[in-house]
Image (cartoon, rainbow, N blue to C red; front, top):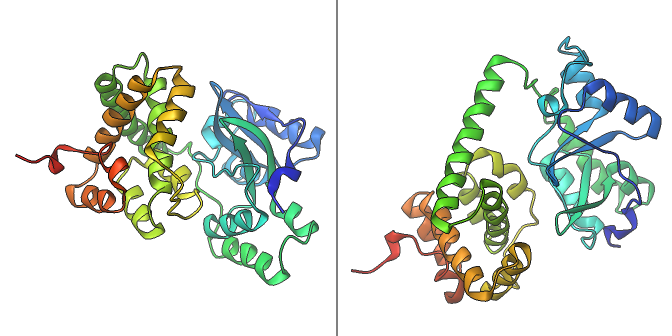
Length: 289
């Protein structure tokens, strides 16, 4: 059965600057276990009741002054509503999570939880128990992002990713860094989905840490249905551009992405792409004399 049955007509979505106290009240009044955090129309994070207990109460923070972007989990794993229940179970087990937002074309349409799958008997009990075992093996609560070390680490990660986006924005002639982010993440998602699972893991490991979580959450590839024409069509729709401009965006940003990793890794990625896509991801290391 697909996950479309877990669509919600109404989702609790809050802003990054919302306080932890307001989030806790939203959880209580709606009788739910998590809220989603939306920033400029994009899913930025998720905050669960456990996050509030361990990252706010457990750290002795003031829930009225602590913002959600200080405690939320970033790089949220998502699935489309058309994905299968089995895909959700496998993703929960692999990433040690209990909730997966359902997102289609950038719009949040619902959320499936481990409890939903358990109540619906979506799989044999031994498969569902593997999700719990994986989470128990992951150790204690995540560290608070309010500590100086965590804040410095996050600042470095954001600076690294923003530097990459700024370079791609200038190279592609895009109007804003947010456009560069949107185009880059669209192309990265399609590229990673086109690779085998092992190759994708190696490739993702060399990318900025802020995008690694969402890319590792993708279903294992290779998805051979992904073509150059399909990616260019998505770029045309997202940026309202003609085919030539879409092809240019794919070529410039695709090349920039592979130039951001080691030559050996770029060559490995190239080796898994069909000729039509290989031409769109052509860093200088592949150019002949």
